[in-house]
Length: 80
Image (cartoon, one colour):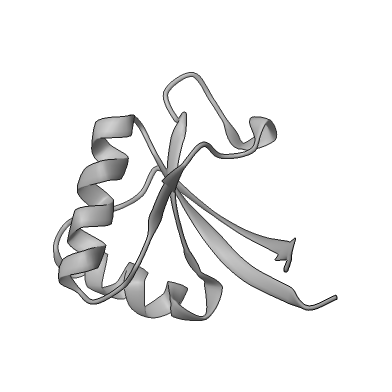
C-alpha cells in the first residue's frame, strides 16, 4: 500500500482556512479545507488546509512573504 504524505496548515477558524486555501490557489497550489485530527485541535484551532507535504517548504515560504502564518503545521501520512 502506497503512502501519500500531506501537511496540515492549522487555522484559527473555518473562515481563515477558506481564505488560506484561496491564497494557495492563487499560488497554483491545491489545498483542501478539512478538520484536523482531534489531538491537533485546541480551543482556537479547529480547521486546517491539507497540502501535499513535498510542497510544504515552498508554500510556507510564499505565505510568510504575504504575512500569512498558520497557527500550526502538522505533517501526516495517509494510506492510498
